[in-house]
Length: 172
Image (cartoon, rainbow, N blue to C red; front, top):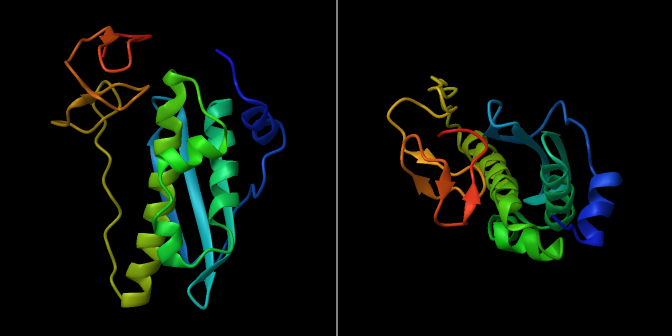
């Protein structure tokens, strides 16, 4: 598994690590059972991302994704930041190994959740905290199993993902 120089640089020297205590928006994604958890904190001034921080528990790719994502979003207005995609993050990192592309999904999802949280607060909308009822594979009861590498739907008890051609570490 080869990583680009950019991925390695952001892994070894991540930018914008930390917490914003009085954040205007917070987005958290991931699954502690799979090993990747990502939280994005936003401080927004005049509809522009004035500060952005992250806390990530996960592999080197997840940390690099978080770091790059914060650099891509910093200084953008909210509408521009909403357009940042997982492909944008992976491209800015000069690619990720196929089995690590799911990390870029986490980054974009966390950013979009933080923006949604900001917009909800601004509109006076209070959403309940999601209740996590973990199944044996780390997803909620009744949800489809997803490949941990590419997020494609896979069959219960699968050991191989046809979508990304990855062997699964454990039966899913």
